[in-house]
Length: 230
Image (cartoon, rainbow, N blue to C red):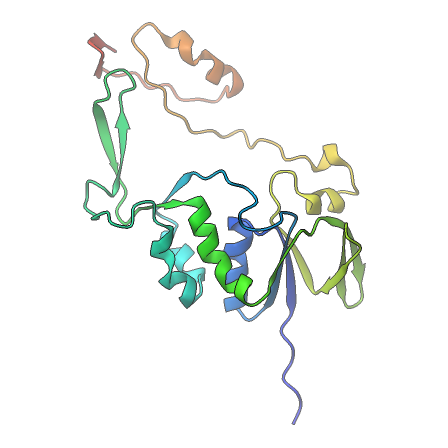
């Protein structure tokens, strides 16, 4: 009986949220996945901030392993919050008075800690030894058998595919563009979404936004803010 074919190996550069959720999806699809990150570990960066998962949450959860999905509540900012139409909404508050101007309904939305979410998603790969820390990519060579990755510590890894999830200053992208940092530099898309509420006659306060992003929409209404009609 012929031996079962070995799963194709994908080397993911970057063990942040993008790299980890991709790794979960690829592993579910039958790929052998290994992640490489230049940081020393999950706790290398202490800074944390909340994220709101809404319309993408069903797709996001469909990619996770059963174990990660079971521990998803550990990533919630408030694990004891009772979810109601009011809590599953994004309030817009006046910066002058603090009053709620309106609430944008977001059914099913969940606010999570970026750090805790990353820990939940990394657990499977840490347990299986599939995340290798302290790995700064230096070189990618194409071979008949796939690609060979060389890291700054002199180690090499061979994979069938390499996927760059290493952020705006991606080393993968730089290598693919021949080492030219300027050509490989990430460029703004030209799209920005922002909200600014100002008093009537204070349009000059949003001029810096308009100068930076000339394609913009300005909405004017009659909402009373701080006693002045707009």
